Image (cartoon, rainbow, N blue to C red; front, side, top):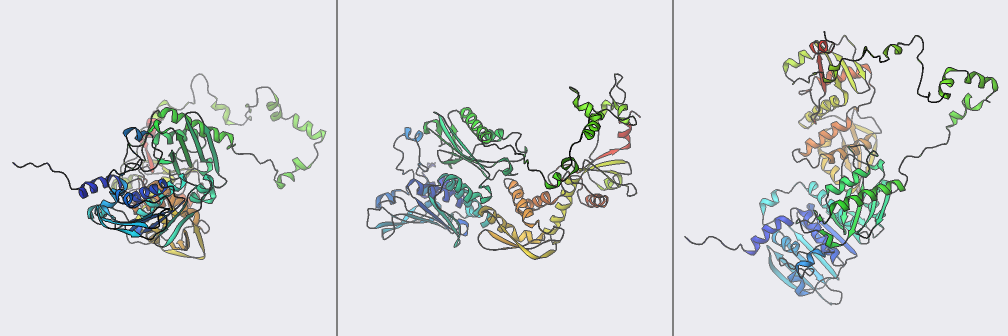
Length: 613
């Protein structure tokens, strides 16, 4: 038998290695921009075509390279930053393992122009499939321009796994934002298909955050600054009113490198405890500087997951720093003591307080109760009040049966027999409880309906039908509204416009990161177009990590969630009736799109057991 173990050719080995480092165009963006930063560039330009599938180009004014270095840079594990194993634990630069350019050259066609400032001419090098096609002198500006063309041209299977242009562009913008936030002293620009999406001059950290995340945060950021012998924590967190339903605007950096850490995120969340709802996420951009020997950044190919020498210390410092910042800057709401003019005109304020009026007030029972020591909580019932019969006595009379807390209510599976069993009585009015639940009498008892979950189910099936051919009519606006978004949200909305048209929205691009809303569904109140769309985009991002949902599924779930009647809203009798009719006209009325129950059914047998009858 011949020997079967063979060495892989270099180009195939590089392609396999590239699978870890270059997963999509955004991966190349990260690596190339980090190289530009390591080259001490003060101005970096990113040029994209077809969401990086055709071109990713990074142009910088950094140190540049000579002819030999330009050639060596594309060899695997060729690096200027590592000389021995100990150097791995003293890393302060962004790229250091010498894998990025070799990996890019293995799966794309690469052209690079580079020149040192002291050299009269630069070097041009062209590489394809890990092989140098051409190298020659060239006239170029100091610095480096590297262009990656036709990503995965030689690995068609990998190219087929890339998402739509809009989805890939969102990943590119995400990587771009993570880098520009970490280096506000560098100027950056991003041009996509000839359109400039970002132009960021060097600035302070706060202004860089505002430039990227939106001017609405300018007065809503709280400075974090804590310095110890072990580490320094600085950056900004959002005031509680900036919290969102998605994690999008959350950034951690260690020694200026963006990282992901659920552990440290928990530290920030705990600092906001009782200040924001449990299902909301605060904005933050926090930087941790510490000795590189206390952290291992080489545990993952993308270097976004790192290992601290002692995570508990970092957790405690982060939590304390954020808590201190929120307390120091008086985040608790302030009271406005300016009296309303209408209040100042009331008799109690405007008229003099006479002795006769004083005598009338001090002789009242209410005054007597509140002026006695420890009696402010006591209000005596009137003689004809039935409340006195509900005072708890030693016999336990008038207490609810103990079994009520374990009441065996049902949310029966939906089938054809369910419709008949749960047919609610039209001759008996529907009752609303706590502005959240509807009580309707059925043929066998009654049902308790959650109005928001029920409406989400109705809207979900309506939108699903719209995307399957029953398009919702567009009501054209007499006065079209313009909506201005951040660059990532603008890319996302651009991707959703065709499906939104099916759902009754007529939206057109209107310049950089702007759109004009020409029409909306007939049932949308005028004046709420912008707020609804922004809320839908926010909810869509909430579903973004769910790989089981298609883009359309995420959209209609987001629409249903945002447009549904919310818990706490008072409904008229006809509105309650229409809501129940709509719910039981659905194909699956017993649960919301997210799997929450829309109703619970109480039948006569259960009610009799409650009262021991």
